[in-house]
Image (tube, rainbow, N blue to C red; front, side, top):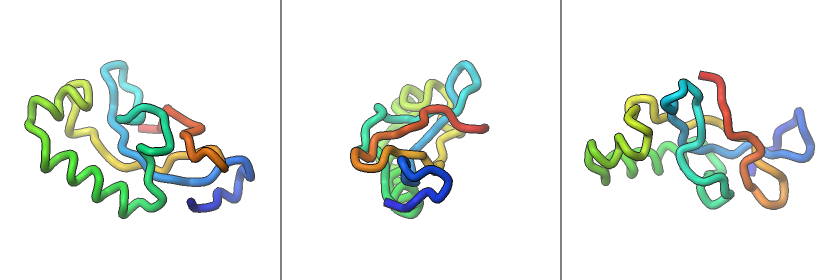
Length: 91
């Protein structure tokens, strides 16, 4: 996990996000460490696999009808557990 110098209780990891029906950018997966990656490259590979291995219909459900908004973002995660410390992101 990468160190986040602004907060010693968190580290920076990477996760897949999308813009939900209310216009908020949120995590695409449940808020557990297992859905985050240590590097942006690892998360980008996961997103590519999600896109390659799902139908348009499945991607629409996955991203609440907005699959074009899927993208990897840095995520503050709790040191120790690795669980996300944030769930909303700037658009």
